[in-house]
View 1: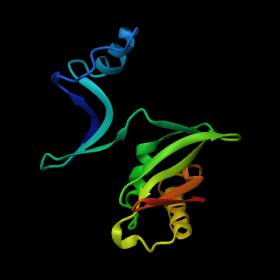
View 2: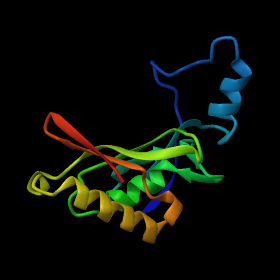
View 3: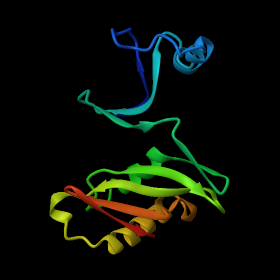
View 4: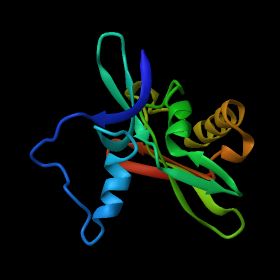
Length: 154
């Protein structure tokens, strides 16, 4: 049971070889952080049995009122809620905070489809406030149900 940066030790046929007109940036971004390995930019968790779970982009940061917050950190907390199957956190421009946060693409587990969006939004705000911080609570929650969605301002 270990987590960290997902890096690949050998080249593969479809891998990127450069960034157009900026090869130096390619080297600094993907090859310099972990010499001898290609850094994917993703975090991963490996179980004792050798299974991998991608935990999200390591460089995906939202800046809320001067607080830098990783989206994977919030998604991990949200995914522990009994009704949530998976989640994605995205930032959006906010007049006061600089960037706001929205829980988006939030499909519920099949047995939780009767869960009210307003109730879920309140529970997720409370959960994130307790596990991370009050400023980390989302401004909006968008719940997805089999082909339709509803957005609620939190």
